[in-house]
Amino acid sequence: MPTAHAEPAAKHGTLPFAEALPWTRNDALVAVGAAALDLIGFTLSSHDTQGFVPVTGCLLMTVSGLALLARRRAPVLTFAAVLALGLTVHLSWPVGQGLNASMIVALYSVVRVRGAAVYVPAVLASAVLPLAAREPWSQGPLLKPAANGAAVLFVVAAGLVMNRWQREVDAHRGLLAERAVADERRRIAREMHDIVAHHVTTMQLMAGGARANLDRNPEIARDALITLEGLGRTALHEMRELLDVLRADGDTREASTAPQPGIADLDRIVAESREAGLPTEFDVRGAPRQLPGGMQLTVFRVVQEALTNARKHGGSGAHARVRLTYADHETVVDVRDDGEGAAGSSGAVPGSGYGLIGMRERVALHGGSLWTGRSEGRGYRVTARLPLPKEEGALR
Image (tube, rainbow, N blue to C red; front, side, top):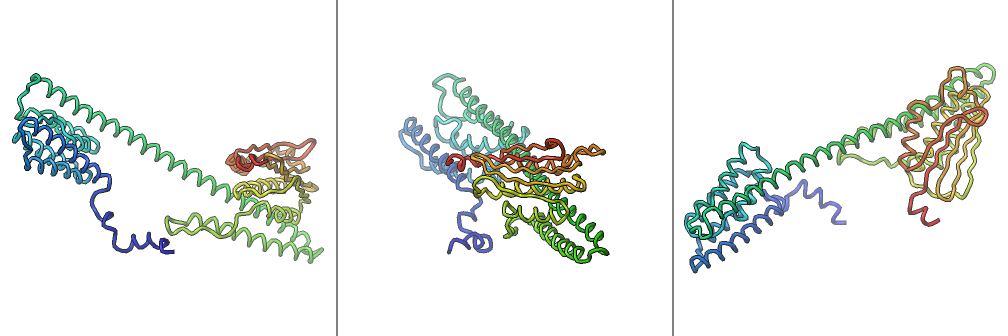
C-alpha cells in the first residue's frame, strides 16, 4: 500500500513545493483575485479618461496585488507597499479608482492583527489617498472622499467584527478542550475506582476467608489463596492498561489490543463474588443480542460495582441476584441483594459515594437511567436501563 508511508515521508523527507512556500493557497487566490480586479478597473478607467492603457500602470497594479502574498507575515509592510504603489498610480495617471481591492485586503489585514495604535494611521492614510488623484472632481468635491471614507469604515468594521468573533471562537474552543480533559479525567477516575474497589474488596474478603480456614481446612484456604493470586494478577493487568493510556502521548500512542470487559465477562465476576463469600445467582432473560462495546462495558461495570457494594454492606448470610434482560427497545440489568446493609445501624446507603456517581455517569452516556435504593422488604437494588441504539431499535 504506497499511501501508507506518504505522511512520514513528508515529515522526514523533502517537503512538496506547495508546502515550502511562505504563503498558503488561499493567500495566493486572494492576491491573484485582487490583482485581477485592480487591473480590470485600471484598464477601464484609463481607457475612458485617456484613451489608452499605460503599461507601467498595469505593472504597478499587478505588483500591488501580488504584494498581498506577504500580508500574513508582514501586514504593516504589505499595507505600506500597497499604499505607496496606489499613491504612485494616482499621482501619475488620472484614474478614477479610489479604494481598490488590494488596498481593501491590505487594510483589513492590518485591522485584524494590529491594535488601534497601528490601524488608525492606516485608516487615515487610506481615507486621504483619493485626494491625491489627478482626475478632476466632476461629481462634486465631497462625493469621492465621502464614498472612500465610507468604504474604509466598512473595512474597519468588518475587521473588528471578525476579531471579536475569533476571540469568541477561541474561548469556546478552550472551553471545549477543558471539558474534554475533565471528561477524560472522570472516565479514568471511574475506571480506576471500579478496578480498585472491586478487586481490592474481593481480595480482602478472600484473604479473610483463607485466614479463617487456615488451621481448620487448609485445602479451602489454599483454593482461596490461589483465587486471591489470580485476582491480584487481573487487577494489576487492568491497572497497567489504564496507566498505559495515561502515559500515551500524541502520535506515539498505541491503542491497547486487549478487549474491554463486557457481557461475556459477567459469569467471571459472578463466580468471583461467590468465591468471595456472597452466594450470587445470574440469569438472562430475552434473546441475547450484540451490544456496542461501550454499552457492554457499562453493563459490566454496573454489575461489578453493585456486587462489590453487596459484599461490603450486605453482611453475613446475604445473597445476591444478577438479572440481565434483553427487552424490545432496551437492555435492563438488575442487581439486588437481601442483606441488611442498606438498613443497618450506621445508616449508610450502599453505593452513595464515587461508585454510584460513576454508575450514573456511565449509564447517562448511553441515554439510560439508573435506579438505586432499598429492595422490597430488605436489601439493596441497582437497576440500569440502557436504550438500544437508534439504528438497532428501528429494525425491531
